[in-house]
Image 1 (cartoon, rainbow, N blue to C red):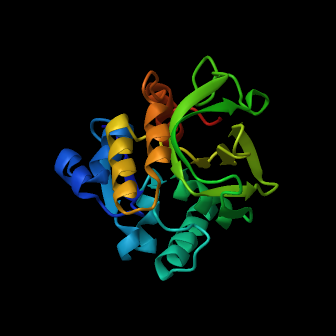
Image 2: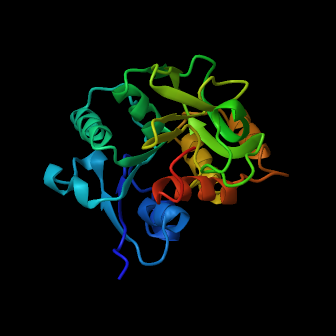
Image 3: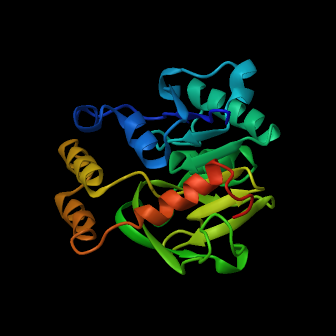
Length: 250
């Protein structure tokens, strides 16, 4: 009998009314994107101080850290606790996928530098360039490594500098670090492979209503998806291969 794989989502954001109504919460968005039949997925709302017991960490095959409205360089109690847990997972060589805020958290615990995006926040569909010299054939991308991938971006912070232990896997014309790995067990992505057009547009409308973004910038962000879509299938393949240990190299 094959042992059931078990994964945990560290949710660092609150469910919006729209996401709760449409998907039943962000947890379901993540599981539908990265999960497979027969797996067990557990939710820990780390933003509310929910964490697994340290003695239970070894029960999991992998972890995902979600995006957040909070700064990964902040010193909120839950952020400090999250960093501590992630350092333990790093020591245990557990698979951890960091997305957006999670991307920055992994860089923080490995000794890199993070902060407010120096060339400004980004929202919309963007193309990132794969650092093909750092990607091994037959790795998480599968048989053929793409030159670039489209992904939805929604962030105001960035990784400023990678530590020596990191491998740069992707970059863009606006951000030096779009994706990175640390050994074979930590993978971080600045964009949102789990987002779709519907989720992005609702976030944009909400940000505008809160007067955190001008309407013209919101219109430009939406326009990036008029005739293009994110490469969700390729991102799913990459992330699933990484989390499920289907190959041990990027």
